[in-house]
Image 1 (cartoon, rainbow, N blue to C red):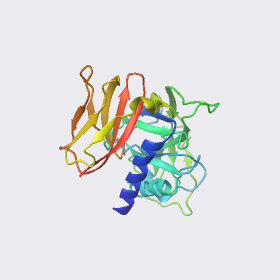
Image 2 (image 1 turned 90 degrees about the horizontal axis):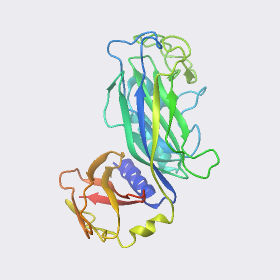
Image 3 (image 1 turned 90 degrees about the vertical axis):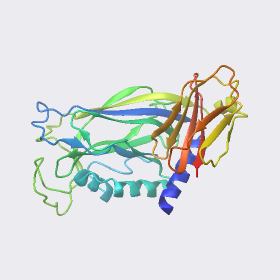
Length: 303
């Protein structure tokens, strides 16, 4: 519980006090098929798409190096617990900003997984994502240290897509989807699967969409905006919004999942009431977005 509270506190504060912030949507779309990948087992599926935003390249995973317990457990079991602990530890030492997790698992062989409304700062501008290829001995997809800043480091990358490939975590010697568990001793380093069944071909695509960018000076439009009561037992009021051209008001939990959204506003509306009585107690992020892409985030506590 203490680790979760620390994680939540760091996440909320990083969302609020970052200087330059970009908001992205990520979609992994599978292209697993019998032509490129030899065959697909009858019960083929993926585990949760999970990962983190962070600042040091290759911090969580690196080709050629032995997988951490967290990466090993994702690849072998589809179990995210140890990896989540590794990300939380990285957050506590200021190496990472937030844990990322898609909203459902497992998802089918030919399907997609989404991470929406992910805010990335200048300091924590890298993203790493993994998911188990199932069934398998120890295979996973990996997007490692994807840099969201542009090549000249003067701004944020706009919309783009990258190919995603299958990797062996090096912890099991199995070579088929349904191989019996054979622990690799000693463990090998993580490597791209160039042979059967994937033949070095891509197994999916990650589409990255830039939703908005907030510069350090853009908060001035939100001067005077207040949120009360906070902490709340069920209702919050956002005041002094008359002169703001609001596009949306959204509430996210600490995993980045959208909990509530308001899109319709009256002209010259002074205050907006949001009912949160039907959500669990805890920390949330309230995000106000204008039609010009300006964003204000505030932490909200539901008690």
